[in-house]
Image 1 (cartoon, rainbow, N blue to C red):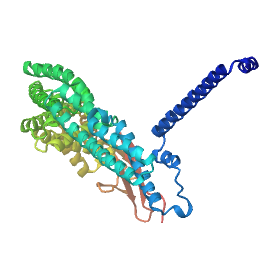
Image 2: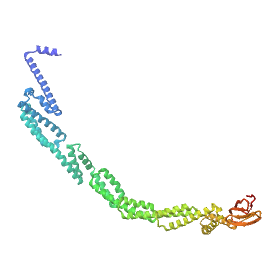
Image 3: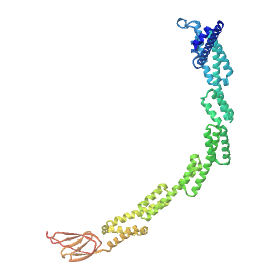
Amino acid sequence: MIKRILSFILKSKPVYKYLFFLSFIGLILVLWFVIISTASNSSSFSKQTNSKSSNYDQSSSLDCSGGWTDSVLCKERQIALSEIKISSELQIKLESMNVNYWGKVKFDSAKGLISQGDILFKDEFFGKSAIKFSEANIILNNLDKLAKDLVLENLKKGTVYLEREDAAAAIGKFEMVLSIDSKDKQAIEGLSRALVLDKLLEILKEIQFLMNTGDLDLARKKMLTAIQIDNKNKKAKKLDKRLSDLIKERDIKNYLSLGFNQLEELKFEKALSSFKSVIRLDSSSKTALSGIEEAKKGLKNQEIFNLGKLAVSLQKREEWKQSKEVYNQILELDRNVQFAIRERDKVQIIIDLIEQLDRILSDPKRLSSRAVFEEANSIYEYSKSFANRGLKLKAKINSLSNVLDKYSTGLTLTIFSDSKTEVNIQRSSNLGKFSSVQVKLTPGNYQLIGKRKGYVTVRRKIELTEDSNVEIFCKDKI
């Protein structure tokens, strides 16, 4: 195809050859223009994404290497590059803060200076270029400071509008802050609160109505919802405090009323719990403290009453020692309980009596002693007045009576001897000489002694429990 075109051109007339030549030159120029434009656009894009100072550094044909580094032109060029770098960083920063929204005029002015600086730099008027970029940077720095001031100002105003319950105005201020700094935590929170402000205010109105009508429990439920919506709203906090105070007053009144009703019904444990509930709400409530004392007193009296019943029950079962311990428990609660003092003393008397009865009945043979017999008889006479205090005690008293009867009636002891032996009963009587004799003795242990001159003395021990016969005489000579 190309060979045919060339052959056609060579065979054409000179005028056509000239026209073809011009067309060819035009095509070359068009291609060159496209290439240059593409390179220019590429360079512009690179400037937006990379450091401008680096691009400016590469675009200059000035040789600042070696000994030329300290030349005036190279120094001016370096200063210009430094200003260009600052300018580039500030532009990027301000554009990220939406500067065209709040500082467009000044930002455009700075960009105009930057454009002038660009031209001067390309023409290698580095000193003048540095001045233009420096002037632009002053404007850009001021815009940066302005951005910070705007953030603080709008945060403050947004907060004020929130407190004034102007949701729309607050939203505008917080959105302004977020357009500058999208990560500002205070603005994010403020915007979130402003967006739900109207809903919150409606709920607070409902709560106020419920408080006015006395429906405090439902008001509390709605307040929980309000706090979840915005737990920093001052109006909500203030209303919550008032609601809490009303609920506290109501609960104190209800608990006090319940407690005193329970005291009247003798439900002392429940009354104590009710009054303690008041103290948890108001630790200085004198009425509740007084109620607690009354409830404790009632509980103590109730316990004393129950212990008294137990003690009487133990007495009926003749468990005297256990009954005494219960009376002691009562007196530990209140040492002035007279019935406990009186009954404990009575029980102690019975305990002492039973110990005496048991001591005698455990070894009745001691009654063979006149002194012991008389003591036992005295105890018996004293014990008869207690026979109605219980079957067990009565049985012991009857047993002592039988033993005393046995030892007081006497038994017949028939003694046989040889009429030559002197016979006597040790610590009793001297019977003399006889072949047989009968004596009356109380039951017990006795020792008979037989004596005869020239004979071994004879001793005979006997235990007398019934009428008996015994023989004693001396038969072994000395």
